[in-house]
Length: 237
Image (cartoon, rainbow, N blue to C red; front, side):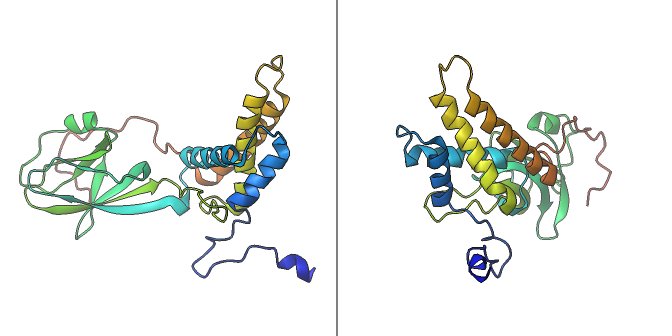
């Protein structure tokens, strides 16, 4: 029993970042053993695992991927580039330094439907579009806006890299099932439509993904249209 404890993941001082038991090397070996086909190399397996990680992160908003960035706006600047690693969001925005809340609308079209606000007022509304954040009113002086968002996961590049953004009890099941489904789909192509292994690992992946989304909710938190304010007198701070 004492020897078994040596193989359990240890918690890092800053939290559960290293608690995931499986690194890329171990996940690759597991998938390779399941598929058991000489035509499937380690690089192909690793790519499938990475695609699984990206798919899982795209399906929900993982707490470990929550981030904040500061966007500088100059006088008369209507929009600024959103962070390059943005995957979901922005989820909220604040005018600095006082962190006055800025209301986020779903898209620039909704922003254009708002009344044209006083030129000298502070930024009260923002909307993402084409990788940029559009604001209204347009700032007349230099300001910074802090945006909260969910970033892309860290890539699995080396054998020791772990999918640390995923919950430890689901990480291996999610990624292995996704990779096996992808690889078997290619290997079973033309197998008289049976694709037994493809369906089996597809079902396992779907079950694990449903459990993940059940933990953190779907990626799209708001599916209904947002009301566009008709007056500017309402406070959003």
